Amino acid sequence: MVRSYEATRRRLYALQRFGVKPGLERVTALLSAWGDPHRRVPALHVAGTNGKGSVAAMLASILRAAGARVGLYTSPHLLDFCERIQVQGADIPEDRAADLFDRLCALPSRDDDSPTFFEAATVMAFRYFADERVDLAVIETGMGGRFDATNVCRSIGTVITNVAFDHEQYLGSSLPAIAFEKAGIMKPRVPAVIGPVDPSLESVFRERAQSLQAPMRTFGHEFAIVERAYGTFDFLGTSGNYQNLRCALEGRHQMVNAGCALAVLESAVMPRMAIAASAIRQGLECVAWPGRFERLGTHPPMLCDGAHNPAAAECLKICVRQTMAAEGRRRFILVVGMMRDKNHAAFLRVLVPMAHAVIVTRIDSPRSAPVDVLKRALPATDVPVYECDAPQAAMDLAVTLGGEGDLVCVTGSLFLVGCVKSLLAGRRYEPVIG
Image 1 (cartoon, rainbow, N blue to C red):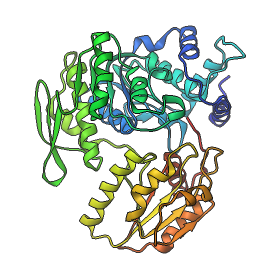
Image 2: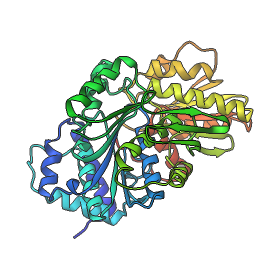
Image 3: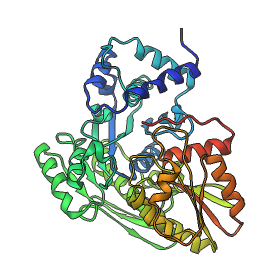
Image 4: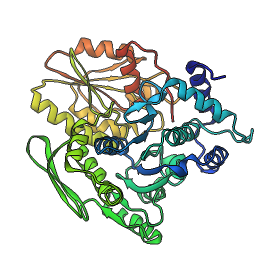
């Protein structure tokens, strides 16, 4: 008998107690016991420190516009688990999620080596995509690449958006080490696309590609974007160019992400299926990716962004400055909460100098950084700094401080963004790390 979705969600979330366990053995065993559904689904596999979710969303949007039946697997979710697994832009139904988890739990497994939350979700996604007979799945890695649970997918194309410091305790303390882990998603003779990376790291990817005989395209070499006026850009590819494109996601970094998406479509998908220029335009203009420079309200004007490392903070800073100038905003009010394992000081150094007021807060999670830790990590500043022990209090204070001519930005963690979106929607928030 299928359990209720609420009961399923509680049992699924309880798997978080197993933490992060890098390796593919558990996922491979579960999928094998379930008939290897991942082998029946061709996939585009997307990794990278920042932007991989945006690229995945763009790919799915363009492929749907081209007439393909598309699965999309991403993480983390903002409001509900079902957001992670989508077919044709629709979340997996709650009853299907409950049924899949019950069936997964019935699979033979070792009691002393239970799957993690992310591994269970990944297996469920592959099974759902196979059952739904998608033409193509777009799969976002959870963390890293080489030992990420998604790395069992049958990829026909891979994308690595960029390399920056994040998750150093799992991926390594140097950029070459992190690049090596992300290069682990590259497969023999499967086209690979590499976004803008430090020139010193290109050799990591080129050596991997050569060893696998994988054709590789790198941003700035085999493909590029040219920013034009009024938020438009051109894509310059190997086999074709597209002019005056517009992406619904704001910022030059999203134009670069779009370039990565188009490059892998050009190298891995277009040889298999036709994608009209009109589908590319429609897919980019209609793509939605919640929690990434997303507008939340107008009284006062408020946006949220899941930036959580210094590289993402730099992109957010540029977008905020452009928005402030274009809309004539007077003051910038920063609401920030972060996880314990992030580089708080480096992140805050980027954004705090722009702020006219800073509110530090935390979500109700053991991994959330305490308010006093964030306050100590702040750079020297003359602007007011406020401490709020909970996001609701932080949002109430931001509304009090902000006027119609100001801009409030909620950032530092996708989990904080999810919490704030839940509050605004009148929903209970359950933080899920993974």
